[in-house]
Length: 378
Image (cartoon, rainbow, N blue to C red; front, top):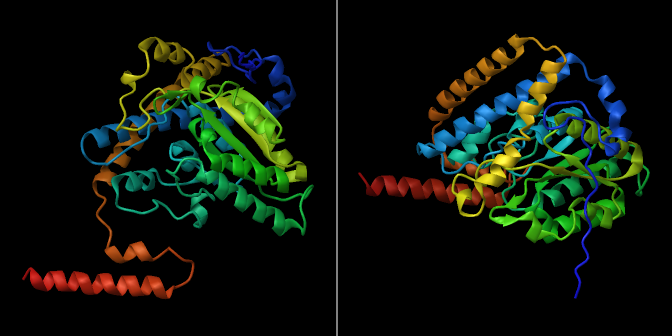
């Protein structure tokens, strides 16, 4: 039996690995999206990527020092996340997986909120209904389930705009992040079915970082993953996820198209997880040093820095970005170490939007139990 496979064409890319501006043919339809970017935008992209990489390493150190139970690094995926996050509008809703640290930070989430979740002193980390958190929903550690949450929310956005489905313009859109391993989950397929059926104002943003823990993407799928979206009828494209400009341009265009009633879109961002899947993982057991070194030559920060230097960016940008990242890490470390265990009743506070008798019953039982234990220990 012959297995039929299909190779992906060259992805959407504006910056080559050495930072040269050299758009691929696939990038041409998205080229105009870069016209609105100013030097200030470029500076923001760079600073955000540098900051989250420093944050990533600081958080990993905190976990290694016993200050957190777990941490999922995002090093190597900064270009995909920063570009797409800046393409969204304030009113859009973002549904992350559990590695989108810089997306949350861009939307306004305090990074200590992320670490409080990993430290085990909160059930959520931040309140997604608080305007300061930019409609950034909670992390989801159950693979793929956030695609269903996002599709359900996007259906609500659609229904708020009009009765019925299809070709409905809305002022806001939804974007959901997930990984290559999640595409093997039934939840993702179900989300794509409902999104396509209802023509939701939604972008599915797949970060293909090449490994679902220890399973390579070559084993997960015999065809490029962006074809999964196309198979459900979604306009789908593969981008160089280590090119922050490609991530911004395609996401910006797809979100705008979704808002004007053209339905959901699918992006596969080709990137690489430079570190472990989480701090409980040892990638040396299943990856080669040669593979890591090869992807290291495509580093999104190094690439974008070279591009900015070619445009005449001042040296002060790079030195101040490094200093700001250092200050961020010092602040995050100090405030993380100061986090205290929450009071037990807080676990019942946000289960339902309104007070619920079952929650009240359980809270009262816990209060009585704690009181009885206190009496016994006197």
